[in-house]
Length: 123
Length: 107
Image 1 (spheres, rainbow over the protein chains, first blue to last red):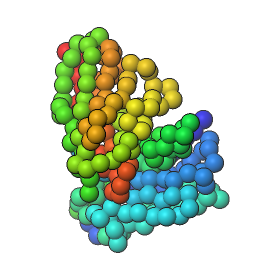
Image 2: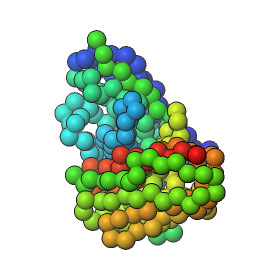
Image 3: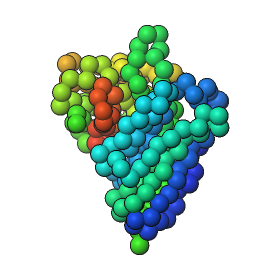
């Protein structure tokens, strides 16, 4: 069964750092693009960063220069290093897989999601 | 950035009702439009990809449609387990953006 499990969230002071991890199982991790999506309490969804199977990386403007995404294909894991954290980074952080094309239909939809890990930035 | 605007922001309907949610893109996203369902306390789940393709395991009462930059998610017969918030998402351009969500409740 395909699974994504996030870890590493917690309470951190403004200006601090956290490293999130996402452990993948049940699929060939190295063949898929992966994403970090966050959801502030009671709010909508925001794509924070993604890394393709070919290691192309993208960051949202809100985190560029502070967050770093990486993947370890040998360990089937995705990471998000978060530095210079701000109050507005408080959110549940989900990792999500970019799905395959299906019968020739492609849309880069996020077909598998983890359960999320909570990050709280507060003094 | 491409703005995705959903309507309504919330709705209340009876079991068995036909329910339609609309998502409008601020510019063309072709058919790179996906729909997700999020139940309280859970992660989102993919329902529809490429505007109208049903994701594996999703009940056939869910369907997606499109007309230019306007997209629809329809639940043909609302069931109690369908309560939650529904989000559209465009994956045509970076940043990938979501609509603000539509909360669906049972009357």
